[in-house]
Structures are given as C-alpha cells and as structure tokens.
Image (cartoon, rainbow, N blue to C red; front, side):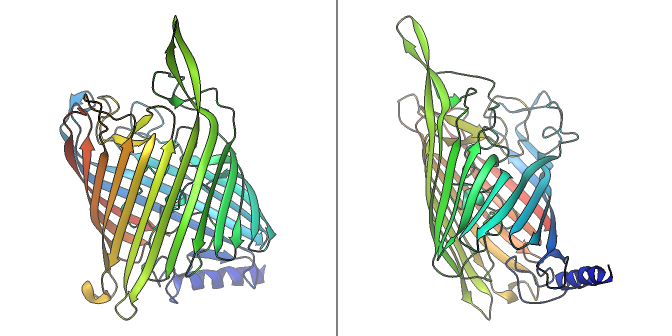
Length: 445
C-alpha cells in the first residue's frame, strides 16, 4: 500500500511539473492527470475532463422563432461540450476506456425534455475494451467506440481543433444511425510500418427519423444490416500515436507530421424512399456509401521563434440515396421555424464536399512569454444533388470561418474567436449570407 501511494504521488508530481512540451503545447500539464499503479508505470489510469463554453451572436435565418417569438438575431451562451474521459491499462495488452458527458445545451434546447434546455441527459460517448494481439500491428476491441472510417476529421479529437469546431460534415451519420458519431461493434487497428489503419464492423442504431418516407431518400427504420468502415493513412514524417482513436487537429509545432489518408463507410439498404408506379407508389431501399481522401500537415517552421504551419484538406463523396440533404444547426438558438431555423444550413447529403483549413502559429514574442496566438481560416464547400433552384441548377453550400486561437496554456486553456459567414437557404432562389460570431472558452485537465 505504501508503494502504491508513493507511485500515485510521484505520478501526480510528474503531471504537474515542467518538462518537455507535450502534443497539447503545454509544459505545465505535461502528460496530464496520469496516475501510475505500479513502480514502472506500466499499469496506470488517466482522467481527462473538459468544458467548452460558447458565447455567440447569431444573425438568424429568416422566419426563426424562439419561445414563440420571431427573432431576427440572438446573443446566447451555451455548453458546446462538457465531458469526462477515463482510460486505464492494467497490462500493456489490455485497455479499458469510458467517456461520458453532454453536448449542445443552451437555454432552449439540449435538455432532458424536448421543450426546454434543462437537465440534459448524461450519456455514454465511448465505452470499449481492447486487447493487443500483435505488438503495434494489431489490436482488437469491442463496445461503443469511435474507431471510425472515412477521414481523419471523422476521427477528430474535440480537445485540439485548429478551427473553433468541426465542420460537422465530417460526421455524416451523426445522431441518425450512430450515437454522437459512435457505433456499437468491433474494431481492429494498428500500424504496418508507416501505414496506420483502423477498421470496424458495427450495428446501426435505430434511426430517429420516425419512419418518414418521401421522394427523397431518408434513413431506413427497417435497417438491420451491418455498417462497415475503415480509414488508412500513411504517415511520412513523425508517427502519431494510435493508443486512442482521436486525431490531433494542431500540434502547435511540437511534431512534424505529414499524412495522406483515405477511408470509407458502407451500409446496405441504410436508406429508403418511395417512387411513383402505375396505380400508386412503392418503397425503394438504397445503400449508404461514403468515401473520403485527405491530407494533413503540421510543420514547425522556426524552432527558436516557435512558429508552425498547420493545414488540412479533405474531399468527400457521399451517397445517401436520391436527393438526400440534411440541415444541421449546432447549438441552434431558435426553437421553431422549420428545418432551416436559427443557424441551420444544408450540411450533409448526397453529393461532393471539400473542406480545407490552415493556421499559422505566430512567434513566441508576439504576446509575451507564455501566451500564443494562432490565426486560422477554414472553408467548407458542398455540392448536393438535392439542392436545386427553380431553374433546375444545383446551388452550392459555401461556409467560411475566420478566427484565431489564443493559447494561455496550450490547448489546455485557450480562447477562440470565430467569425462565420454562412448561407441562409430559406429561399434557395435568393440566398442570403448570415454572420455568426462565436467566442469559445475551453479548459481541459
């Protein structure tokens, strides 16, 4: 017992002391709250907790209603994410991970009842166990997991985004046949030289579309087919850890990374629609086939000044069946007004998408000794089959984000200011672009 207490004290001391800069860009936090359970540290547990709070001005889409009142714009505060993650290894071959929390709570939504934002339900994000079969080349696991296919961004960590948030198009089935980008199933992952891979076979969750069917494809409530997915990336320079599935968004110059990747997701008969036949209509089932190719680079430029460049680009080809389009508004400030209320816009659907982002970490002396500044820009372009104007021409979706991260203690304590220019599709024949300004405060331990 005495030895165990000494190990715990030593581990906490290492976590809080200075040392080499970690991937999150903070010497203060070091390896985080990682507590060894034996003398050599091979048995341990690690606890991570974080809050992301948004303060936001939003120019609402036309016809948005909040609490029964027509509102042109809103200023609100919301919890984008509030979570706790715990993982442990009692042996280098065994790992258990549990991740729970809440997302997207504001004063009018995100609550346990659908009528208000109160008492959101604490739920599992991840819960899996894993066994290492062949050193670095093969580990297998099962449970509610985040070992996703399609792209790097589909496996993104929410702790260290370059931009203030993900584009959401990177999680194409979110809350439809998955549980907040997670599914229940089995996975295999590992490294073969410089090739990092992950593959999974999952059960689709029962869709929440309530059996709605129309001429455009929607999620099939009678879907009992497995979901197959995988992502493969070749890591040319420094090798990234795959102990956990969460890919880092920006290393802040602590690693030199260049990766090329490709991935997929397939679910047979995952969608359905109806089409006209003689004497009525018939049901048609269609597959979900999603593909992505991407490139990621994190390049230290001047070691003495601490400057670094981060860039990421991805191309998606999504097939959800005929004319499928899904509107999403994160932390939507409006409660009524249809699917395009508040800050919602067409985010996912059948078609092609390109997302790109880049950021530059300014020199250390820019803001003094400890604080760092990282301006960035991101652009999301969607070309969906189901978005056509009255003349039959496709209308693209264009979303621009420009902002900056102020790092007070690396990613562990940062403030992000983001300006978004997004389209209002209330009238597809006459698009308006709406401003959205978000100030995010984030701390994670």
